[in-house]
Length: 158
Image 1: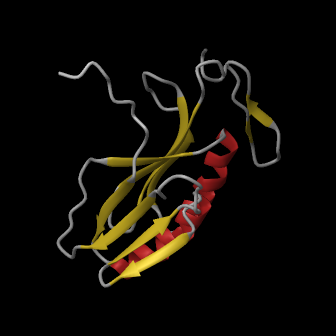
Image 2: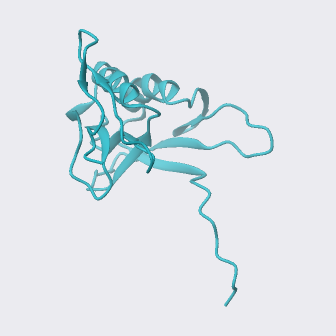
């Protein structure tokens, strides 16, 4: 057994299944660029959304591939947001793009506190957009529709 431990460096890609690629495209073509995955590559039965070119590294991507017999399950894919305000902004975007079963944005119960919106894509796949504070960040700010602070220092119970 090696003494060197692997360091988790993130994910290379996600390869999701959808029942109807056309319906999924209408949804993901709106959402993915907002998450920074703006280059679109298509194939016969799928689409891949790539991040911008990075110097010295491979590009991560999110792929969807049609499977007419696909049945969603309890698995959930969570995308990261940089700030709580990004979660609020992206929640409006997913609603406008046709997401269903939208919950939040909210601070859900979790071992680590974070702020998230939960939803399903047109095939029923469970997704989430979440802001996770850094361990030294005890402040979270969220604004209401009028731009007034509704949560601030200590919002995460830190």
